[in-house]
Length: 110
Length: 113
Image (tube, rainbow over all chains, first blue to last red; front, side, top):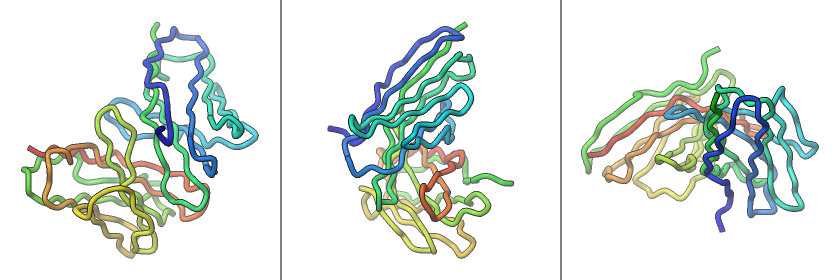
């Protein structure tokens, strides 16, 4: 089983839709969680860190479920500019090595 | 405030050659990590430098080596290039403390022919 798993998609949604991605991780010692956004042939950009209590940044909400070992990203009122690949990142406590998922592709169409 | 910078942006090399990639971290960051990203995959961790030493290494052969300078900038060296080394090489900087939020440079696209 891979350490971090994501559905590669693509998720094809109309503008204004709400879309959610999940990311599962296998190591229960994981302590830090992040979502990154990567546009085609560009570098990943930090979207948000994921805290135990969940966090929200505008239209984006991230949740952590330690019992089931997954994190989620919810995007409300999707915009065309949200089209990108969303990478889930997980890091074990005591390790400096973050593990990236392969990403979930989102396409928002008019 | 300058972000992470990398050079060169593109590079074409022949099998067996050696390459050096460069990275300057974001202002205030003292930790630099290097990643290899193949098409359609997430970035794979190569190694991380902190206080001019390799702090942790991923599952990459010794052909991949690096260095960090006193100003925190870093180099990635790859010897004896293979076709499979063709990828986007990303540098990320972070502060040296948890949660180690990383900020990436634009990457160097390496093609080995």
